[in-house]
Length: 125
Image 1 (cartoon, rainbow, N blue to C red):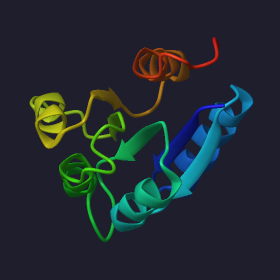
Image 2 (tube, one colour):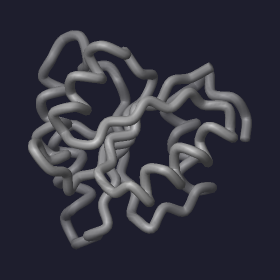
Image 3 (tube, rainbow, N blue to C red):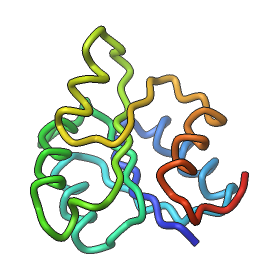
Image 4 (tube, one colour):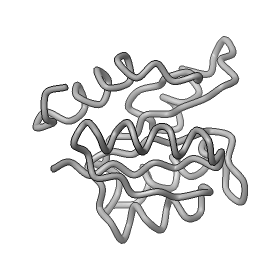
């Protein structure tokens, strides 16, 4: 079973997405801010990280940079999630080290496709 670290500060988004991923057969670990996300990525070694970009304590941009600069976490694929889809956000997310990018509100089929692309051993949806 693939383990996904969901870094999301909005309780409604977090609950909805974690339940839906859980139903798809993923084990979901939850962090509520960027700092907790970095710490859980180190301690839990998830197979993939869904990183909200607007986070308290440490924002998703900086958390992604820290994870990609650390030897023990740099290989973990990260999908950046943002509600503020501005021109250049995708490039900014990829420049910070994210492997892919998706916009909110989340379209689950599209997000699952991206997750499966980055997780070759993911269970089929």
